[in-house]
Image (cartoon, rainbow, N blue to C red; front, side, top):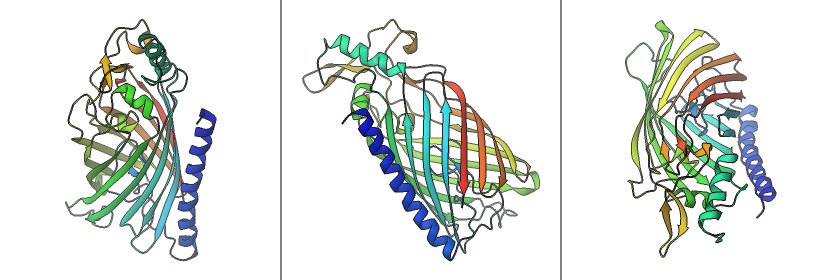
Length: 341
């Protein structure tokens, strides 16, 4: 399947999933559509598709529905880093402020970074087919399906006590570029994640605090696969968010998400008897920092969220993502827009 066919197929899947979400929205609008929650309290959409901050889910259910209705959103995120760009498009539906269902498609053109790896692969394998990735064919596509359930607490109406809103959830992530993941040394291209999060809104000081524990084997949220290098496949990871409401439609804050370094070895560039053998030879290219050793850093961001109405919210953020596989100093910006209905 050529690149154009893959892109067309990916767009078709995105449109199909979004159509399903809109069908649910249409039913809701006909009867139990509801948008009674306080502005911005449903959070924005993370790149995994769930309601929360920019990089970590919150216990808040997406949308502005109360316990008597249904609400949802369509969202788009664009991130620009020195060596990567990310396009994320998806939809989510909140049901009776209790259940959240989400879908997102992430597209990550890796540009010269993995074109270089592909060319190095061809050199070290004497052009042997099947031993790595093809140069100039390294765009990553990932589909993420999510489910979240609020299990106790009510962040808005019970804000006068110390019990936070608590939710449990999970994602099923499917990465389509298996050949690239094999070269990077990942164990899987598909996997589940689970998380539990607690969110507390302190209205007297206009502040939201969230703490999330995620059980995951994802490398770079799954964009570079799951597990690898003989390390434990899944680990417990901590995440946190804090947001301060400047006024009823504007919030500022920061986030942190712990990552694990499963791909801490070299790239799989040489065919071996039982698979691919890691190679860590230096390459003379500044994009890889002079080596093929991989590293992964925790993610951090500072953001401002603006909601002129319940139908639209916009997020701008400064993201510090550190080392992403072969490329250090990945610091940049992202913008996200969410249309609620």
